Image: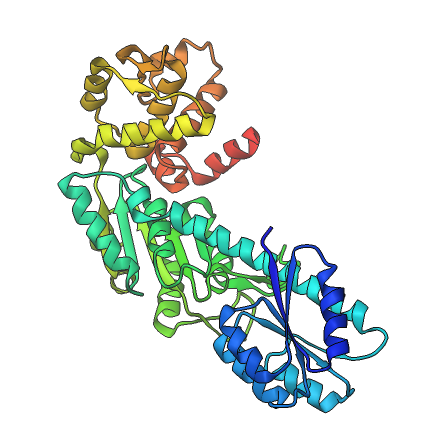
Length: 446
């Protein structure tokens, strides 16, 4: 735990010694005493954590000193110590940024200890939050997160850097498994909004009748089951980023309402009359070709132009073959680090086998293949026999399991959900079954 530096500004020698002694009893505190405002300002550029300031120093007014301290060292907390119990002065000082106002009396020692301990706790918490923010920014650093050197990858990387440097809306398209949400997070955490929230909503995972409530929130009693007021994703993402995944699955009615919000930059909760201004960046993603959906009449053209912003297309892994082995090595390193094990290598047969596959599941599939290979290999060497490609569901595989018709149906649906990245509307269309059937199967599997 780091040392807390306290600067005591007090011209009364006895009281200065008293404060210095009392605060020096606390562990991990370093205490320095000055006797004038001039000395205090000479020390303030050392950025002490806490200043205890006598309001009536002989050479400078306490209020002016407080303002000078907060100008030059805004993170320093200032505790005013005064012989006068003046409520009006105390209120003004607190308004100007003082942390507390303590009167010199028999209880001042306990009060001071309490306030200093409270400041220490808050600064410790603030330091931890800053560490976590630093970890998140490091985790989503473009150079660490996005791995590759193919021509397609380099083009995409440059677009993402431009996206992070602006507030423009971003639309990300790409096949399942190409990493659309990861890219969206990378844009957010490398942007000016990085200290604010990154909020996600997956349209495909939410029944259409609940989408409006999820996006805009609802008031208590606005519909059956609305037992309390709830804010929506737009409010939650205020001054941050809202990532709308699978935006192509929005029904026409929801598209109209989303368009209005993007035009007016304001929302109304379901069942409410209050208008709420919203300010957040929109990043959307879809595995569909929205231009084709517009041509088919499935997606509003005006909404498309509002959302498109900076379009980023994530190339499938089969189109960036040069990156396969680079990514595979990256996933091996991650696996080894997670188990704190020894280095793992590929042999030539494993490399050839990896390069020959088409990866319908893209980067996500490659990671699963590598994780399994790391488990299956012997002597820290991955051979061709350790690499297993997970093909689609086959009838022969299902029949060999002696499953009932119901079990086979469930297995097919679950397999398709995995292949379609849990996109229920896509699976419904692919299997020509109702979405309610899929929801029922999922509920039975819980």
